Image 1 (tube, rainbow, N blue to C red):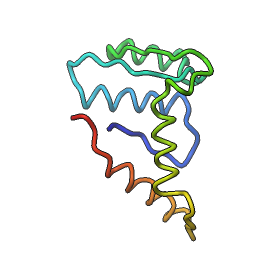
Image 2 (tube, rainbow, N blue to C red):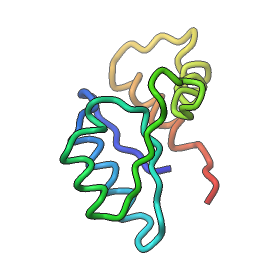
Image 3 (tube, rainbow, N blue to C red):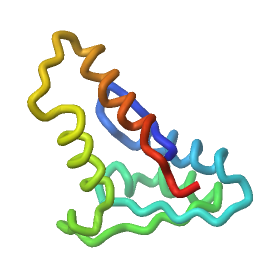
Length: 108
């Protein structure tokens, strides 16, 4: 799993960082990145970078969370490490999420 983790907002810069990291991890391989049609994903800079790196951007139809796999991941994160949990500090909260994401196995 390739991630970009931030405590700030997701924007065109973080999406561009993700595209670059995916390209670095899978050099020379065809990559299609499924996007959920947020405005910052349609940013001209994001699209230009993807084109330069040979990463295909495939946009889901608007209002289709059932097709968006990240929604399933967030539901799993909430149920496994956030539900009925108290975190006294933000760093502990973030560590719980990071540890869970790091523990996930991918199809590699």
